[in-house]
Length: 297
Image 1 (tube, rainbow, N blue to C red):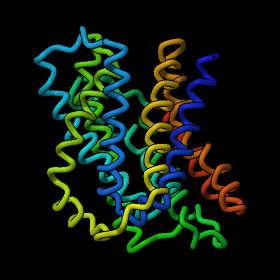
Image 2 (image 1 turned 30 degrees about the vertical axis):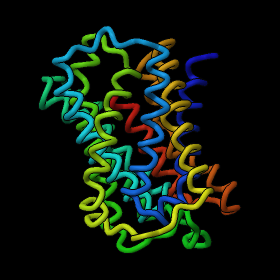
Image 3 (image 1 turned 90 degrees about the vertical axis):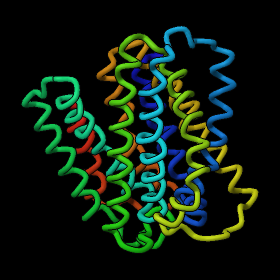
């Protein structure tokens, strides 16, 4: 399989995963859904990692950075991401999430003395501009009441939580960077992060639910478990596997760009799901954001 196809399949898996979880994440609340999904994902990744047995390049001294990465990247980042999705839907959240690229680039400059080229600065401007366009002008008025587009509560609060998610994911990636740079297996690192984050999420269940103003005592339906497993498998197992295949077989920059096209791929999927064409602002904003990411590679 060409690595470009694998990267696009990864982005498609993440887009499908976001649409599948749109209904239960709104009803159960972001933190609660995130905890349940993370529990499932931790079991699946642990089984896969045990069979792969690629732990050799992870040292005991790496656990500090991986713990930090798990806390900010998964506990803070994922809870922020799913809370945003519960409030403003998957399309807006996925576009806002692209801001983790300029945040990570800025972190690389501040923490690792990386050089930020002028093209990268232009990319950051395009990404932020695309996000603003998609958020403000991206909703088809005929679809704004759908489970995918509806805004529950304040748009500003939803944008805030998406920003928390993007910042957490960027900071989590930067914390794990030194471990990956000395040759640690990517999937094994991902597994350890999930295993560290999962019990922390459950320990912090009450304060995170209260902070996110999540619904209380909503019953978990049988279909919720199906959607939870499907979204977790698509995003964390298939999506991650396709991206790792693409990075291993081809150019890392191109694979990362193609893997980041989720906001664009989501639009025709939304068209199919709602039978309503997304607004022009959604298409232009999503494409601008992806172009911005490309400039930053």
